[in-house]
Amino acid sequence: MKFWSENTSLKFKLVLVALSMFGFGYAIVPLYEVFCDVTGIKVLALGDRFIESAGDYKPLNTQVDDTRTVTVEFDANVRGLWRFKPEKSSLRVHPGEMTTIMYEFQNMQGRSITAQAVPSYAPEQAGPNFHKLECFCFKEHTLAPGEKKSWPVVFVIDSGLPRDVKTITLSYTFFEVGGKTPPVPVASNEANDKTKEGS
Image (cartoon, rainbow, N blue to C red):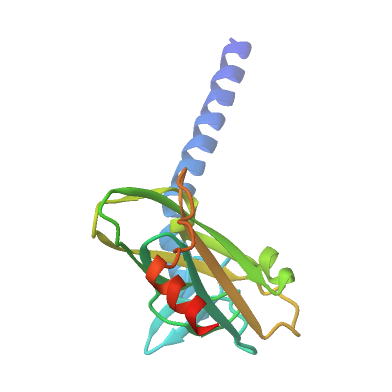
């Protein structure tokens, strides 16, 4: 009987501990809210930095370097008969700031084409610090005759970019996949004759 009573006592203690833990877990959020009200801390996500604006708390992006700006110039080159250009020739951005630039495309040929863009950077050391989150250059695109498209480039310049780099040129060359670069136009015979006569 003594063994039975010891087991019953242990079971009762274990059930009491389990119920206490459940109750504490259930009450932790209301208790924490009371604690925040008493201490004046009004954010639950303490792992993030917050700023207060008119009573609202918003996340503070600590990755943007507001102490400097970098001019990003956009260059577009084409191989073939189509139009390809950025919506703006340049933008001033802060390192760490997410930025979007749109590029416009139009197939000027009388047939469908599949093309792709290849990027390059100047100066060369800017490349590893220029991060594209979204880019039309990631894949090939097919455009019908006369079709127009607009595609974005979403990028972030790493704050590790050397401070002496003030300007970055992002250049794209847009070319037909599997196609040939059109030959240089040959002057007509009449034009050649006039050239010979003038010489």
